[in-house]
Figure 1 (spheres, rainbow, N blue to C red):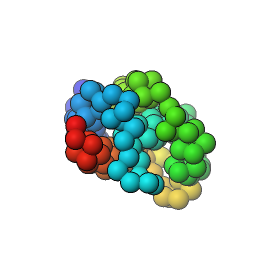
Figure 2: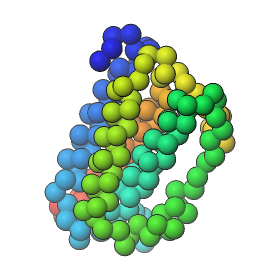
Figure 3: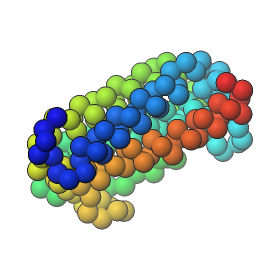
Length: 161
């Protein structure tokens, strides 16, 4: 890794790699029945969480590419609940969803690893969040994963896995 990365970017990337490995380990041995368990109506199963994370990874990837190609593009917000309903997360194939998520996360890790130092500061105007940079997106991916790892661990505990 380039030692000229902007302050904190190398740490952000390192944290994202570590949280990714933890998340991959949490879901690695779940079967479809375990992954489909929801502790309560209205709460997401591990499968739904992974479908959500997969879609978020794909959206963030597109956004980062747009930020790299355009000067301060406008990024529209999206509603995760609407996307979940539209894509029918509970009916998703667990093995495919898990694989697609891991591939999307690895693609984002590769993109971030290949950035030139100045590219971490490339920005956009987000409809809901205002000005954001690629580094902000990387931090969001890490924070977002932490939230959902807790949710997956809780589901596993309640299911007895």
